[in-house]
Image 1: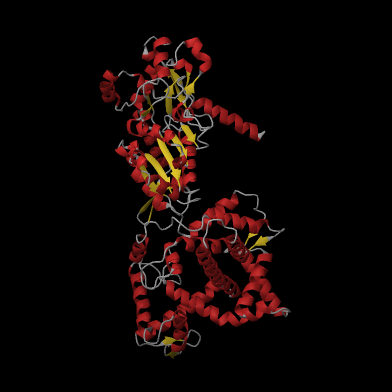
Image 2 (image 1 turned 30 degrees about the vertical axis):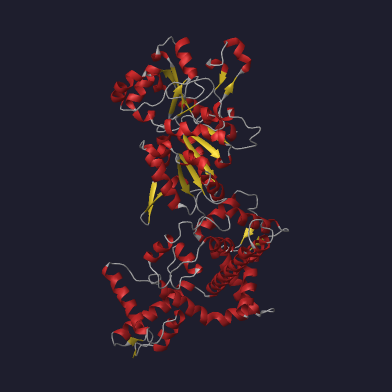
Length: 631
């Protein structure tokens, strides 16, 4: 019953949005809401802006793409600002084809699909409403009814701009049905729909021998020529090509540069003049955003052909690279896995991270900065702090290679290999080792990588394995520390008390006896050595900590365990070092005693409750870390 109630409510909602009236009534609507007469480009931009704009690290982030596109903020910002925003303001870029160019599985078609789905939803809102001449096969703007000589006055009065002319069908209907009385012409509200072929057209190249230009521009209805007596009679023509139906919205060309030349020639006039040739009619006006996508190889082949210069000059090329952030790559995998029927198979924590590390490393290029390797670069790209490098270094690296992210392993390959690991046997869970093993096996079957690339990729799998090993050891060691945060904070405060006394030539008071003692040099050095602070550098490091504490105090902030990244790392490593032997013995014992068994059960419980493991995957993690610590 709930299902049919929802269907009924949806039908009622559509009925309530429907509107039919005369052109005279439509003029009054436009007088109150001039935005109703906006162009297709403006409608798409308003749709994007309506979802809101965030600001992260000085960069604009359009929330419209948040749920489906990850790690492409820079490319999206450039796409929206340089193309959609400019085109919405009627600048020259609206007379250009938007060509999304990038590697396979990089998100190009997803971006276009989101734009199409978004425009469908936006046309059902008040701000995105689309009105068209009722019965027009191209759903054209009713203001085209106004004669050219009167348009200037109407534009001033209504605060709009009128571009384009009536299609041949509406010209005839105006004469025959309405006898020239434009005020009586019926206007209706239409809803953009790819399925209903309203405001969205899609063209895919196929066999040039069988594909007809009529797919784009419509065709003659030969069964009616005898009835109407002429091939130039609009009633004998089907205005059902993709360019006709895409009017007022988006025209998508899939793998555009694979199209036969004769299909692309129609775009020369459409992009620059806003019209195209069809049948034996004058040029037909069309208001549509033309978006295409292709890969880099096809694009290079296209621009190398001199015959394509005219079309090339009418393109705005937007590079869409692969994502270069590990955290965003994980979101991509989670999204794709979430669309499958494999939710019952548990994916142990850090499994997708290991795959993402491998993927990102294949896409990065070696930096020219001294001491900067790919792992450090990967961490900085993902927002982590790397000792010895600053924000300026990050920006410099991002500008080193314009083509960075245009090559490497694609998400589709990784998901295929994760799927292979998930489907293998009847597993309860998979972990990082299963994923990396599957990635490695897949390289032997990968059709497009060279022997040299394969060697590089195998090395990156080893690096990803090493990164996972470190994560696994940390996770288990943390779980072994009872009330880890409390232990860390106690050690942290103890260290601060000692360095404060050391720098101020003072004494430390024993919390139990109240006795005053010299600062505990052994304790301080045992922590500092964990992050490579030498004997000569210890004084500077301790003074730096005190300066940071003083700065926090002046600003009214509390200096805590998480305030200094390097000190936090040192505290954690110190705790882990003290605990290593206990972890090693407990995890590797084949026949644990009662105390060890109790400790193992507590750790497993903590891994399940706090870290997202299942009992089976936590047990496997303990066995693996035990083998690592005993090497």
